[in-house]
Length: 339
Figure (tube, rainbow, N blue to C red):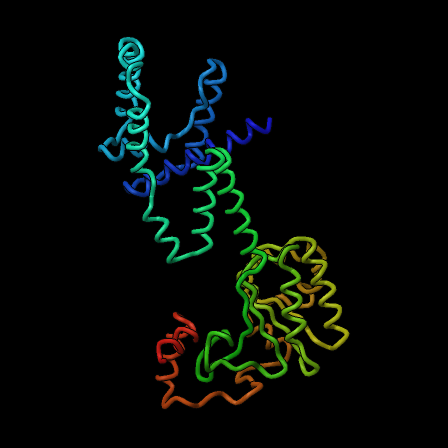
């Protein structure tokens, strides 16, 4: 059972890799569900005849693309040629040395090995490069099945790590500019007085709820009267996260601090009610906008800030230009450019 499941995973991964790679190169669309369905039916038929598992061949697809094959005629021609060789050419093939057959396979696979991709990954994303190398050496040392499995497992681990530690930031305002902006990314953004504005860019579940809670608890001071979570990037929440938010809300209540969620999609409110957070919705502490949440808490524009806005630029136009630059590149990039 485990061997069959492993083979099925390898077939799916290799098939979709070869198919999507060629689709991207040649500019046509591919339906992954249809691809998997067709290969599944092929393998169902194969089980009655005892043939090898049916899958997309990276080497054959690469060779066909290398020599201009662009239709199923290539596969039909290859099948007819193979049948003729098996019927009439086996006596000749038996005298071919193994190195010749190996050279044929290597020639077919050279077009499929994307060495340029390794260089690109090394420059652009070291984590992806590590997964590439792990899968590459896994195939060399342990075989195709284990190599592909290593690549798949590491890819899933990367997804889990990224969702467990998503992007997040505290927000403030920029004088003369609408909206709320990251304090870390914008030089001229300043926090609101007695208010914590917090943006969390990911769904809330058991693996990242500690990060969410700890960030808020560290930001709250004895003068804080309101915590507003910019939940525009939160689309779902699990029961563990919901229970922790209930505890957080109760703790904040004891200190006369109101907790708000703002800017999220409406279905998140349904999820709140289902998981025991309906009190936030019913008491009006789930708002369509951050400004609406602040207004409900008794804060209205122009907002008081914890510190005086920075006035180190000559005009609002200069400040807006810098703000746009930092929005695109961040403050660290700006500092590096000016050194």
